[in-house]
Image 1 (cartoon, rainbow, N blue to C red):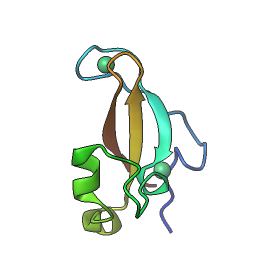
Image 2: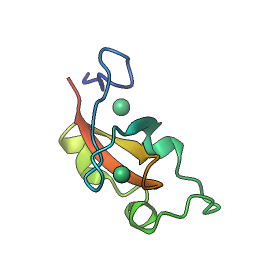
Image 3: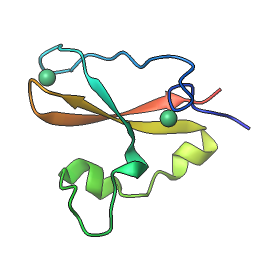
Length: 81
Ligand SMILES: [Zn+2]
Ligand SMILES: [Zn+2]
C-alpha cells in the first residue's frame, strides 16, 4: 500500500509560497482540517471538500501548507510511495 512520505515522517515537506516565496509550514493532511461545521472557511479548500477522488487513483496525499507572511493556505498533493 502506498504511503505518504510526509505523513509518515520519511521526509520533510519544503515548499515556498507562490506569492511571497517564504517557506510554508506543513499543517498536515487536508482531511484533518475539513469539518462539517465549516469552521474552516478557505473557499477554495471547502469547495474541494472531501472530493479528492483523484487522490485515491493517483495515490496522492493532499497537504495543507500555510504561509505566515500572507496568512493564506495552499494545498499541495504529495505523491505517495
Ligand atoms: Zn500526507
Ligand atoms: Zn506568502
